[in-house]
Image (cartoon, rainbow, N blue to C red; front, side, top):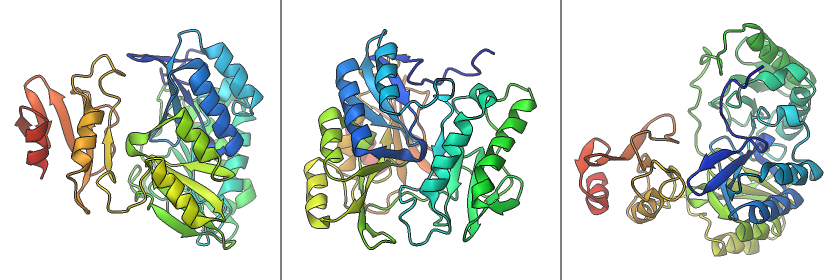
Amino acid sequence: MADPDRCPGSLRLHEAADGWLARVRIPGGRVSSNDARVLADAAEACGSGLIDLTSRANVQLRGLGADAAPALSRTLTGAGLLPSRPHERVRNVLASPLAGRDPRALVDGALLTAALDRAICAAPELAALSGRFQFAVEDGSGLMAGADADILLAAVAPGEVELVRTGERMDVTAGPVAAVAAARAFLARGDGAWRMPPHRVGKRGHMTPMATGSFLQADGRVAITALVPLGRLDAAQLRRLAALAPEIRVSPWRTVTLVDIAAEVETAAALLDLGLILDPDSGWRGLTACAGVGACPRARLDVRAAARTRAAHRRPGDPAEHWSACPRRCGLPRGDVRAVTQTDTGIDADGHIVPDLPAAVEALA
């Protein structure tokens, strides 16, 4: 069967202006410290050393050579990051960065996510899903309640989950089986659709952004969440993160959460030293941008540099804002977002056409 879309993976790379790009699926956004070191080493050995966090809590390695896929595949397989080659693009599972640690949770979202991932990989036919098809786990904490998911398993009582699209309730251990059955039914329609239509419950794709700062875990230890400006790390930063905690959780909001922290003050200081953001009122909060000049051949504006300028002018409570280097507006988030776009006639700053960056910043004030 032909691939239903061109969504990149770690075996099928995507060509960008700065080389080839690999997208590594990370179910639940969970990266052990060893996994983080493997990804950092691979980013340097195969590419430019740059690592992007995606809006689906996956990671992208940038600047790869056109022939990098075999070596990258061996590295990821050896580390356990590629458990099923046929399913490598469809292991899209969103979960709370605090899964398994959140005192508000009704089920252990970390265990449920891992079980769902195993169930997906054990179903050969699900390899035919689009790379855009999305599963999600909501553990009862509410963080994933509005996830942009085709299939959402949501906790409704201690040890009980609901398949949200159908309303069917079941023991948490039966959740992965029900989710896989729903995905099979979607494929059986045979209409070539990449994704399911939005379900009748909730607003798909409208999640409250993860708060930055410290969070008390159910076991009394601490988790710390930091925002990664524009979702980009380099290999050295990722290695330093790996040294701070046994596990890193990546989120759709381009944050990293370090769990099971013992030395809260020292860890927070280390995150700030890495250039990450802990201040909930930072101008970086809610500010995103496309890949921009140097990474995309269509780009007409260095939107990453523009976003750094804009971050210094944003105020607490400002709406979400996305900068695009061309009219395609790649990466524009769902919901209420101010769009700033480079066009043929100037910069469209949320509906106001202005000639340059200073004028765009003034128009947004």
